[in-house]
Image (cartoon, rainbow, N blue to C red):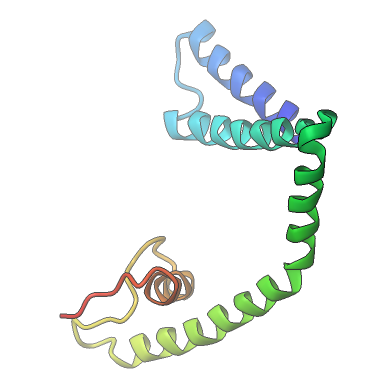
Amino acid sequence: MTSLCLNFSFISMFFICVVYDRIFFSREEILSIGLWGMFFMWIKVFYWFRLFPSYAYYVRLIIKTMYDFRKFMALVLVILISFGNFVYVADETMSGTKNSYAVEFFGIKTLDAVVSLYMMGALQNFSVD
């Protein structure tokens, strides 16, 4: 249902702008709705693979695996938030200087600290300077 609603919204927003020859919605808004509609549509296509006996076992296996690692992902989220809090406080103590541990991604300092920690820890994307 989510995929259907998002795809309908995407098409409606696009045609409203085309028919009235005015920009009621920005290009980014229309593409964001289309992006999420496409994402959920591909999830639905993946789920339809259960109809084929040769794929049904693997789809059920992936779904069960995702269900089983939810507690682990909750633990990872708590760890990221706790160490992100450390990075945030460390950046706030250096607010008068040009140095910063967190990189600006969203413009929200707390969220930027958590994402920066993820980028440093999981993706090993950190600057040595």
